[in-house]
Amino acid sequence: MDIFTTDDPTIIETALNGAKLKYITHSPDFGPAQLVFEGACAGMNDVLLVEPDGSLTGVFGSKSVNDTDRASYIDAVTKLLQKADLRKLRLIWVYVERMTRTN
Image (cartoon, rainbow, N blue to C red):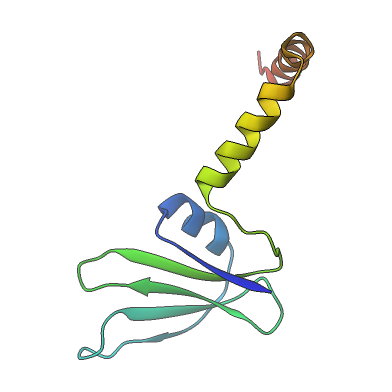
């Protein structure tokens, strides 16, 4: 089980969506407030750190062994697209686009 941290508000919102707040700790002399949530992984808590300046950092447990950052995902997708048959990819894209239209 891995732990990852992020300051991306979208990832924090997604990770904490529907999570149950367990408790809040804060010491005025000792850095950020900590909001502790029940984690998605059994026996682990997710923590949202709120700095005095209002900045947020999420600390989350993950079942995935291969948590990578956004740049790694972009690189992987780019490599796959370089190998892809673009005509077939376009056909799939057009099909999916038509399926998801809400006229």
